[in-house]
Length: 93
Image: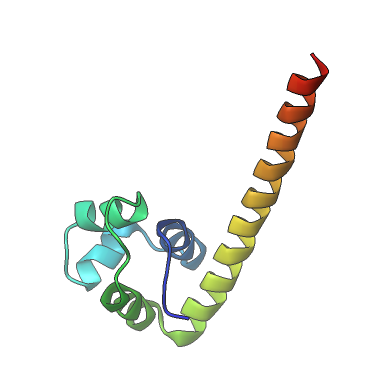
């Protein structure tokens, strides 16, 4: 799968130890352009996913994406648990 969410892009860069600026310079695009993808203001198009793979190399990309997806899954689980607790408090009032 070559699609990437804005949060995946953010975490892949963080996990790989690179800044948005470093990735932007490798594309080459502005840091604000990359920032807009990270914030979800622009879609992470396939050409930028491919550029990220080339920038990081296949192994680092794959490892960073795996870690990023685990982090996102953990965040989603915590969010769901938090929402359930809030719902229980609201219903119990």
